[in-house]
Length: 136
Image 1: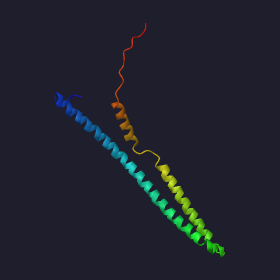
Image 2: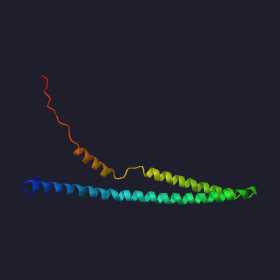
Image 3: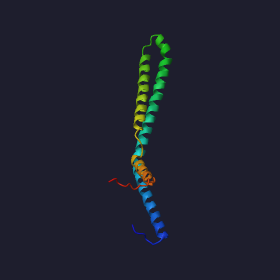
Image 4: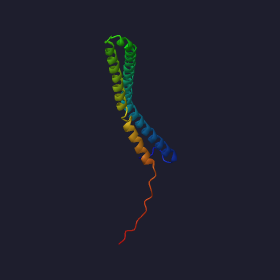
């Protein structure tokens, strides 16, 4: 690469231009992976809201079931249906939370992370190479 101007000013200008280009490429990679990460976070939030809805409904039916359990002592058998629906809602909340946790285990920004690791590896000083005399 040739400098635009000779001397330290030209070298500094080229260095700053190189840094700007590098950070521009990292920003583009971040934007591209940010869209995917945004979709994943949105899906996780939808699962969380649905899980909370199922948990609240499950709690409601379980509490109603327990409240009417006294009525079951009076031989009102329909209360077991309310308990069953409450258990199904609680199971649905459990399944959705498990799906959300499994979904969030995949790392976010894998390409950007790999690029930064490569950059950091290149910045590490290389050990000096000692000349070895071959034994004849």
